[in-house]
Image 1: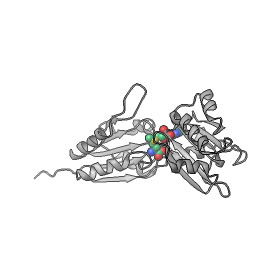
Image 2: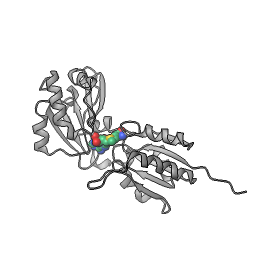
Image 3: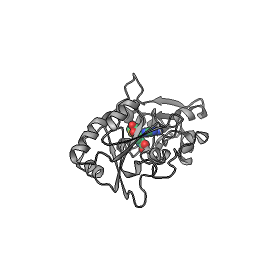
Image 4: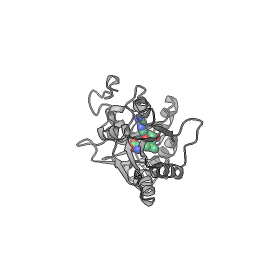
Length: 255
Ligand SMILES: C[S@@+](CC[C@H](N)C(=O)[O-])C[C@H]1O[C@@H](n2cnc3c(N)ncnc32)[C@H](O)[C@@H]1O
């Protein structure tokens, strides 16, 4: 009797961009895949040529001029391919569980009875500030980190973290929200001179850091024409010179 091959879904974190910032386990799972469902952010373009010719690649990422594939469709894709007995890898930028909707994909697989695993990744929330020489916590300067989604409502906890000099606020998906964020912070009494750094394209050759303050960020971001992807760091650790001589710690030679 012919045995049915049982498929599965592996959600893997790709890290902030360079393939060598992906975990060894994530890379192994990617190389074992029959189907790869990939996002635009992350290391996929660098790794694509390493996949075997039979591997089916499905690009569900957002690109200029293309709408992203809705989450429900991604969930269905994962389940459908796994039910055909295939090893499906869902490759995401950063970590699957940090604003990556990985939890929803796990629930969809479990509801469909499809085996699913999750492999963590290096999140941009920590690694992109690091690439610009910004430690999100630093003894004596910041003892907590609050990570928020700039596309969401500005919550009371986000305002409290920006107002607390001992807390670093890290904003993902925040470029379009800069004016809203700055206005809300200043209205709550966050000092205008609170340091802010905007780190674009962290860990890539296009990395750029704009150092400013919450009072000046709107004008400075506009003048610098800040674009996505970028991580915004608000708090004392974003001040130039915290790690003397304040270098960008990303070195092109290692990417
Ligand atoms: C949908 S969220 C995904 C976050 C991801 N799961 C993680 O853990 O890094 C996408 C946001 O991550 C940030 N991001 C990801 N990679 C980045 C990079 N290399 N440089 C700057 N920001 C990055 C940007 O804020 C971007 O808008």
